Length: 390
View 1 (tube, one colour):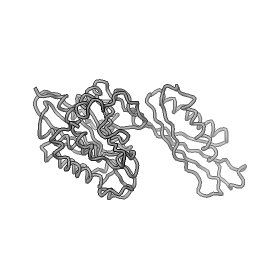
View 2 (cartoon, rainbow, N blue to C red):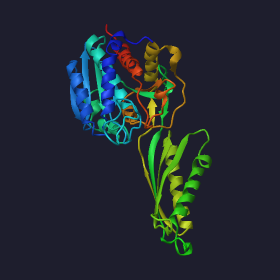
View 3 (cartoon, rainbow, N blue to C red):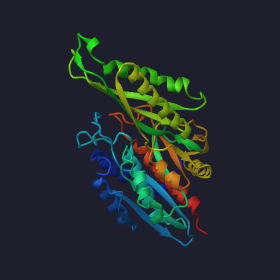
View 4 (cartoon, rainbow, N blue to C red):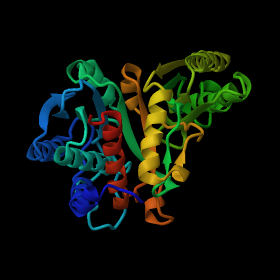
């Protein structure tokens, strides 16, 4: 594959950095060690470093020439609250914390691009290297935007890469329009009347009410929305009771809703609320729905998707760049950046049919170090293409 030769030269150093970050994972807004490591490396390459954005976030600024053009590249730094079960030598040393989504690799790929661009200066403009905290539910991308990310560091366009174990190594998904869904959190609290399990007629059973809510909620997607639209409603937790012979007072259900269109999002919230209240009332219980809006859909801008695909063609080969792949129901807080600036979220394959094809958020996941020079080269090519010298 035509990766940039200089990036290939320092691939071993990049892999060592990635494994160091993997061995020392940090949760959202707690990425102090990772942020220090990134800042030290950027500064050593002569890149201007700005820290304290969204707490542990930072931006490296590299200027060359005087064209006035600018581009932003974003990488996330945080880990997940999971226990790693793999046996790799660089496995997590922090109990209950793990880089199970590849943010260690995303950070390293952007560092590789930063080092290369700092050495070669084969562009005319300004590159902003955005290292973001708290993607895994903390909304670090939103916080960076709210704290004036693009006011302080203007970007004509912004791009991000995310590894994809389902794609073979060296392939990419570069698709205009919606690529990831909105992610909302659902909590349903059912209030009944507790009592002895042998005397259910004297009780109002919140477990029974909750179970019927779970079943009825599935009719929202199957019967209340246009079949040509997409949505997922998954109630994934059901907590109630403390003993096998006690009907509890309260049951709590938790889950997620994934949608692409605001009108579908509104409909799901309204229908779920109606179902929750009606089923509870029918059984003499009381129930409340908390519907918390989370990350918005990740929507790529058409022009920037075309530009990103053209750069990927140069690095990976046109036959390996998928431009018409369907959207997925995962979510990303890079969506907040795309609401403020045109850009593209790129999925890049790391699958090898073995351990690097293990799914994201799996306790045996490990980023594929062979992907590092490809991702770094893609970032670098984008900068050189979008801000050419002369």
